[in-house]
Image (cartoon, rainbow, N blue to C red):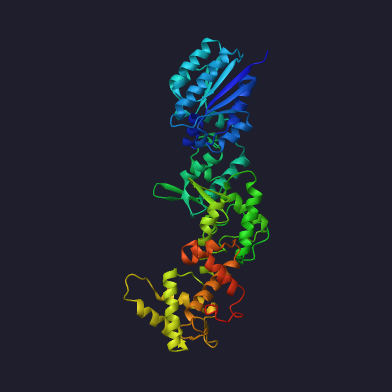
Length: 497
């Protein structure tokens, strides 16, 4: 005769309790334990709670054969509890012959249900997280098991412990050169779903435990705190045997590399640890990729440069990565334009200051051309130095001059060092409306530079980057039509036509 089992899961109590204890809730671990304990059939599986608080859990539970009873209401917890009790009692009334009932909860509100089930000759097994489990409920059950004890039963092998230490250390040191040893211990506990238990190493302290792995981790003591870092000789996860050539990858190469690595590692997952992405990027690039060669002190800091390519999420000491949503991409694209243009030496000066500076440059060169670069900067700066409502620095003036030179609004004497303060500058454009022509040429120079980036080109986002509003998108389309390919081949006065 088979032993039929009914499992009722209090989603809020069990999953939130596990999260508060820094444990990952694994329903399959519970199911495996119940199968071994009862040697029975898990016939009835239901979960109760507000799924909005556990976004990924419904999919996991459905895959494990659970029927989801969701309650979305301000009184969700009470409604879920009542539904769980009603369903359990209905199984008795309708004559379902379940020998064992498993209640995955620690909530004392289920004491009457436990009593009712036991009076009818049913075996009741309770499973819960230690800090959320009521002693009264525990005492009523025929057997009560802590979720932590189920996890502890999964002993790690020595090679698994070593790999866990490597992964935890890399997660912990993504943004800092060192971290407290206590944080490393907690990270190992979290990553292993609680399987890492220092007690298996006897009375050895965690610091002594770490000393067994000098090739992976080094420790230092500051006052009473022990810190961990990479050993001086090597980092965790050495790159492939071929050493990197020592040259940074291009912007287009790294964007393509991030996207390909995400495609290969995410699969059906919404997110993965940043360390997993980094390792895949190293593999795909045959060891060429190294964030330090890209001018970043850490992988996490480097990824922040690409918000339209990869989304970051920090959970405790662990950095996770995923794909940005379409909304996130659009929200960040204009910032990406500004960032990369600055890297290319043509920083986007705020529109109000940019237009005022450009107008003064044109006016100064109409009075006298050529002039020394430094003289133009001083002239424009002196005019606005006393105006407290404007912030026009010499740095901004230099930035506008650089864009004007790129846009062929001005020319710099070829015998002078580019952008030198002693370089001589001449006005290139003529016509009835030189200022309007200069504005359009400079905007076109910005747009052409944006079009050459590895990031998607969006006129509305470009308008926000240049003018802080998407309302200029239509104007910028006209600019591209006039000056889209080359200013040099379009020396007619577009503004006058």
